[in-house]
Image 1 (tube, rainbow, N blue to C red):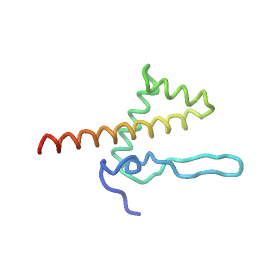
Image 2: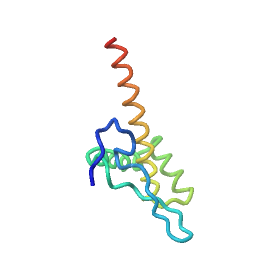
Image 3: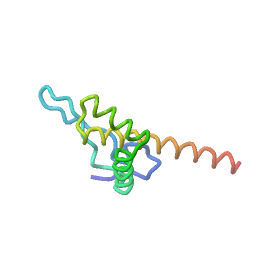
Length: 102
């Protein structure tokens, strides 16, 4: 199985996108194990730290657990959110780099 490209390929490249893991009445999703392993490792470290320390990440994590998510599912949701934030930041920086070069 081939891995996807670099960090600029978006959230799917990080392995933070969801895959279906439903069974019976349980509607669950699992992390995609493909993608950039280094980026996934960084996202995991960020999610663990942000879910532990006070701040917006912890607030989001607690909101997800209050919605009935397990701690593991809440951390996965936080990883997806962090992946989206990083991706949009990279796009923003890339756009400004091209504007500055022109």
